[in-house]
Length: 118
Length: 108
Image: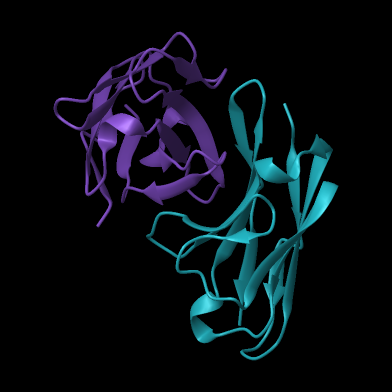
């Protein structure tokens, strides 16, 4: 069974930093691109970032470029999102999602809530 | 950036009825880049349709997708109680960006 499990969410003040992790299991983690997608309360999902299967290619939404860094450790089947310069509008549930290879996301984690507030 | 607009915002129907959900793009989208998801409260989105008309693994055949260009449709032929949820369309563009619509809430 494919599983993605996020951790690391929490409350952080504006301007602060946080690192999210996502552990994948039940599939060959090192052969799939993986993504971060966030969803603010009551809103639709918003794409955040992607990393290729071997980690040599990354992409970011304009809203997080320069503040967030995506990375992965295939030896640990783990995806990371380092978030800095956090703003209140970064408050959301952050999901990791597996890229299907067909321009969509076929499996999602349960999400990690990040709240940016003083 | 391609903007996806979903309509209606809320659709009120009864079990057994047919649901038709619309997704309109601000510019043409290749069929292979269009997907649909279902989301229930407190859960992550679930992939229903990819490539505009292909059902994901395990998705019942009462769900179907169609469309091309800027207009895409998700149809649920006979609503089951578990189908009442929020539905999102999503597209990919060649600048490696994915965007989602704002959602259609399907309620009883």
